[in-house]
Image 1 (tube, helix red, strand yellow):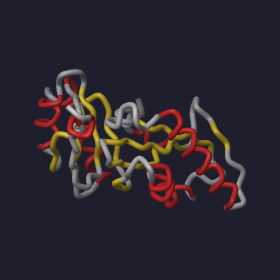
Image 2 (cartoon, rainbow, N blue to C red):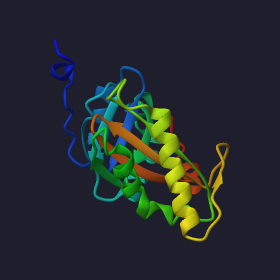
Image 3 (spheres, one colour):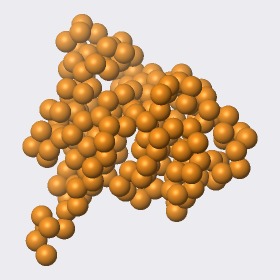
Image 4 (cartoon, one colour):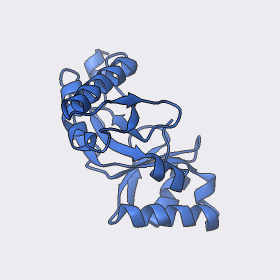
Length: 189
């Protein structure tokens, strides 16, 4: 079978939350999260995506659910609020992700940060470490262009610029230290 015929396009309409389940618990995670928003499989093992009306309120309800619900703590590995979703191609991935990151860069100016890319799909065609490094370089230059001095900190950064890809779609977000501290289930891999 030709390589093109083996590639299955995963269509995930815009989403503002991406969650991963503990191994083999995606269906349980879907049941638990559907009580809190509109969620569906993300097209990849242990990944669900969804839309919620109020992300801040949703995060509070997830925190409460982890404390009280019998199902959610057995299924949720991590959860990310997503700021923006986009489609990209192999040829335009870096430019598209840079454009999506631009509105988030002001929050990083003068703060410590790093960039994390979690790639799903495009195996062997999109090199995650290269994309991560190249995007971080562009973010660095955008911060410098704003007259600020960029600082990278992998141990405890003020912000983490996160890109989660699902085939040719991506969700991008900025996770602040305070958000990660307030909601320990909001974390990167």
